[in-house]
Length: 432
Image: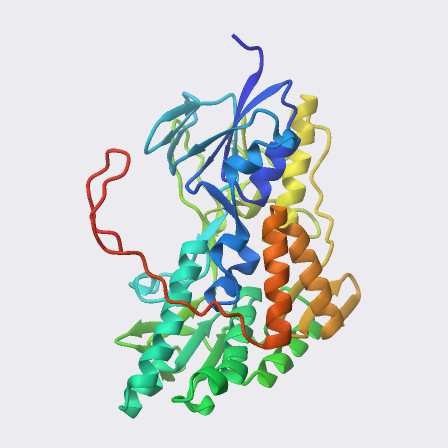
């Protein structure tokens, strides 16, 4: 028998991995649970969706990462957590039940469709690597079908790409599609007139990148227009039915491709043995030590929690840096057995890229745009990737794209339909 306590971490994103890396293995045995067997890098999902990178370049196997000396004897379990029993101190996945002494919820967020009926079934999203692959396949499929179609209405619908949401992800995928329109269509799709392809970005507020500075917002708008993207502000989506998007002001857009980046909400987990429920946005309300209020020995870090203070009365921004810093701070407190270090977010800046030589960076009161910001964005994202192989592959791809204007990755690869398979004793089903 070991005197060590058992720490269970749900979620292997930035928050969960940084906690697992820094927890004292002499005091804790650690089990990391994730629905996938790999860590992925969400800031580059848009490049997978626009055929700039392969998904394997922005993902890294958990078991290889956790086998390194930095993590000690951290154990990995693949599974989707279905229930937390706070009274019995157990976590239940579809495969097993795991006991814990302390539990950390680092599940992150998923798409928020704001109650629009059936929207999830009809739009493309970018919250995971599989979703980004699906989006890439469908974008390329639309181009191939448009080349063959002679019906002007069908071609217009196929070649209209609507992005909903003007945050960093929306701006980045719009810029990537704009580069395809400006550089790729004339060279590789002679059957399509460049002006036929419409890339439309709609945002419900009066500015892009509303969490960043006015400087960043203005320059992002300028860069998108240079890439032939039609930006429409103060447009709120109402419904999407039969390839027609309807807005609250009565306007409509006819399109078969809607990419949704408009909002996020916390991942849902069923709880037993407690009346405590997640707060606004389905996120766990935590104190200054990231303890979930009302749940002893349960903590929440990353995008799935709300930590408020004087600077952020509505909660810290949902950024990777917040998740990383929360993971490190919680590790120090758990290692010391005394919660003395309060979490305080140190803002290291924000950035977003719009395309080649076009990016915006906020560093406190300093704001950078253009080529310098783009170079800074590339360096930060390269260093943030797990694995030297991934960093090398991504760097080579970026350099190749920069000098040739062609990624060479515009491949439509869909999984085969048969045979039907059952996994872990579950009922057989036809994969979608």
